[in-house]
Length: 454
Image (cartoon, rainbow, N blue to C red; front, side, top):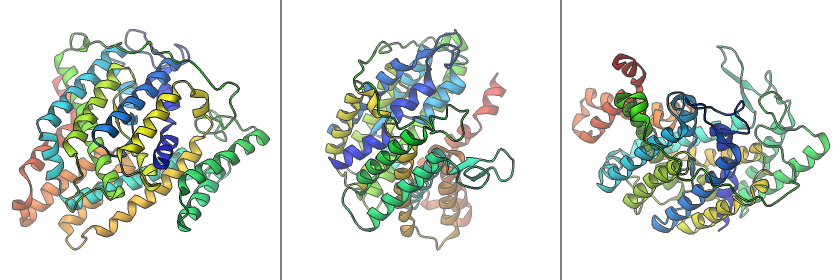
C-alpha cells in the first residue's frame, strides 16, 4: 500500500502535464488540429486521471503486478507534434485505438509473449539498466539540474551556465540528499518520507520567495507547477471527451499515410511497454533467470487494452509507467499496490488542485534515486564477449540520449542480430529477433520511406 502511494505521487504529474501537451486553455494556446479543433485542458485532465485509474486497477487485478498505468509521454508528444497537423484530434485518437487493437491481437495470439521471451537475458538486463539511466536523465532535466546549453557542443550543461542558480533546482538537490540518506540508512518508506518532506520544504520556500512557475519564459521558475497550497480542493471532472473518436483518418490522408502512422504508434507502444515491464520486473525481483515474469500474456493483453482505452477517452495511449519503479523501491510487489495507485488517480479527478502541490522537481529527485537502483542491475551482465558488449552498450546509451526506450531496444536488437551472426554465433539468434530487427530498420527509416511513397 505504501508503494502504491509512492507510485501515485511520482506519476501524478501526468494529470497536469498531459493536458499541457494535448490540450490548452484557449485555441491560441493549444495544439490545434488540421480542422482547427483543440482539446480543453480541464477535459484532458479529467480523462487522463480516469483512464490512469481504471487501467492501473485493471492491470493490478488481472496481471497482479505493481506497474502503474497512465498516458504515455512518447505517444502523446508524437500525436501533438506530428499527427494532428494532418488529421483531427478525434481521428488521431482513432489511430491510437487501432494501434491498441493490433497490440491486443498480437498479445492474445501469443506472438507478443514469444517476442518477449525470445529476447536474450543479457539484452533484458541492458534494457533495465538503460531505463535506469533514462529515468535518471529525465529527473535531472525536469529538475533543471541538467539543461540545454543552446550550443552544438556541449549540447547540455549543469544548471544555468554551469552552476545551480535556481531555487527549484536547489529543492531537487535537497530532495535527492534526503531520500538518498534515508535509503542508505535503510529507513522504511524512505521515498515517501523524502517526497513529503521535500514538498513541505518547497511549499515553505515558495511562500517566502514567490518564484512562481516557469511557463517556458522564466528559467528560474518551477518547471511545471509551483508548490502552492490550493485555494480550492474539490473540482468536478468534465468527461466530455469520452468517446470522441473517429476513424476518418484513412479518408482524409489516404490509407498508406494512415497505415504508416499506425505502424509508428504500434512499434513505439509495443517496445516501450516491453522494455518498461522488463526493467520493472527485474527491479522488483519478479523475473526468472531468463528475465520473464509471471502472468506475462495477461499483462501484455491488458497493456494493449490501455492503448484502446486511452484513445477512446482522448487521453492518448495508456501504458506502463517507469515511475512505478519508485513504488517498487518502496516495497510494492503485487497488484494491491496498483489498486491503491488507481484509486488515488480516480480521486484525483475530483481533487485535481491537490495533485498540483508536489512540484516536478521533487518527483524528479525520486526518479534519479530509482534510476540509480535500476542501474545496479548492470552487475549481472556478462561483459566477457564483445559481441555482447556492443549491443548491451547501445541499448543502454541510446535510451537516455534519444529520450526513447523503443530506440534503445531497436539499436540493441539490430546490433545483437548483426554482430552475433557475423561473429559466428548465428545459431544462437532467434528467428523472431531477425524479424523484429528488420521491423526496427523500417521504423528507423520511416521518414525516408514515407517520403519515397509520397
